[in-house]
Image (cartoon, rainbow, N blue to C red; front, side, top):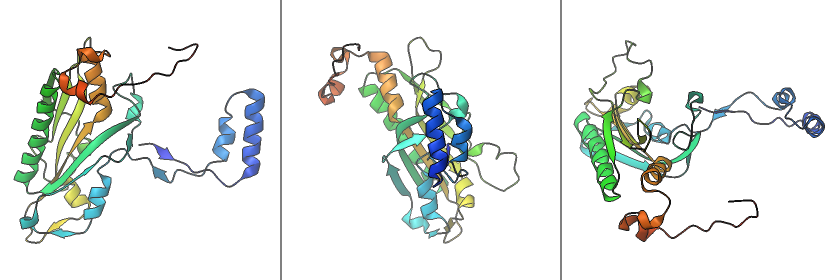
Length: 244
């Protein structure tokens, strides 16, 4: 996560910061730190957080399940453990997030359906792709060794990748996860008859879909599938004397 520090209301510190910046032509980090408060919030590293908070300490009835939400409202920000590279693993990116709650059977069925739909979309776009069992579900980090009585699915994560010419591993465009009772326990969500309920989510990386598509199809729209060309309205590149 990116931890954020708000600026202090201290004009004198920032006047010193501005003066030193003007003189040395480099950011005076020590002065900048003096002008910032301690970190007090984070930029959203995912888009599913509000869903679990919405359900926190609530009671649901199995007959009303599954509950499904989706979000496409904004950006996701990740430090990526310092491993950002190229255009396929960046610090901020756009995505669509699908989140759901239901019985264990329902959660797995919904997860698999989101993967199947993604496969069909890739086929319609004439892309090469493959899906594998993911080995790094975010919510299981360090949790399997804890004795907390949490149920975990046999296959917690499926990851769809679009192949990229010249790269051994394709770019991950869909991450489809089943959380078991991890968030159910963590947010104290109850079923009125004490029946088993799980949650799941599928993240669809829009930025990575674009990257994977262009890596395979190139930048000439004439080489794109008809379904994509029909939706493409063109891009006007501003003319500069020094670029492109």
